[in-house]
Image 1 (cartoon, rainbow, N blue to C red):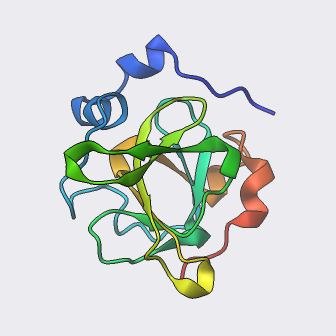
Image 2 (cartoon, rainbow, N blue to C red):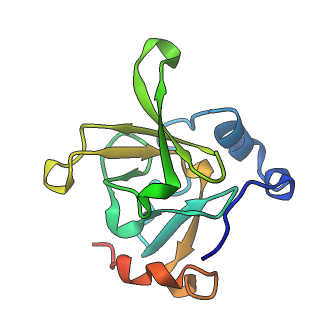
Length: 149
């Protein structure tokens, strides 16, 4: 099993937007994220640590303006923390090993798929296509990726 962690080199490779989102708890403008309309089969990993976070088979169109998922690919890789910023009470989602700010989770997702909506910033993610998963060290997750309809 791979060891996922935040490194100075990984932080140095981030774009200004990726740094603002992942390291300074920022949020992309709605509708602007690179992966909002991605319909390719694969997984989404933390841009900093590489830890696997979400599968394309769990992505859905929520209409919120950010990529939305019904559940994490590996629940242990996603930390949920109480967030009381901006006068709201929300649940922040961070990568467990990389400690990257990913977004928030809400309880207004599809009821037939568990009822959760993981609302995630594209800037915190790197997409790994199903065809590249094995060569990039994510072969153990290929069976969890289905064609996107």
